[in-house]
Length: 124
Image (cartoon, rainbow, N blue to C red):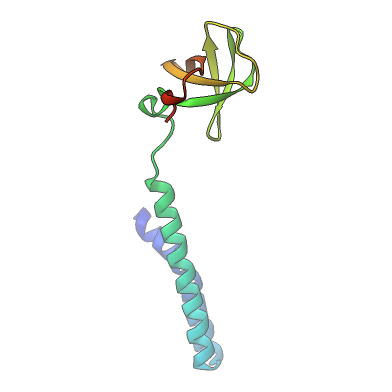
């Protein structure tokens, strides 16, 4: 039922244009141009939504371990880091200043255990 409702919402503008065409009888060539534009728009929306829904989440622990993050609040022993567009609480065994890179070693709850980034070959 939900899929049918979503399809109806996506096609609502085309249905409205058909109703306007039937009522007003404006020239058929303009109707074809407008309906083509609306269909292309719908195809673009479906492709974009599909891409968004198909992307892997960064939230899984298997996607976070060994990733490199940037410290946005100094870690002493707790602070915050940024990974992609997400801000995470982080904990380290040493002082790590703001703006430095860290590598994620483990996760405890919603807190990441990090170390200062030292080696270029660790980054992925």
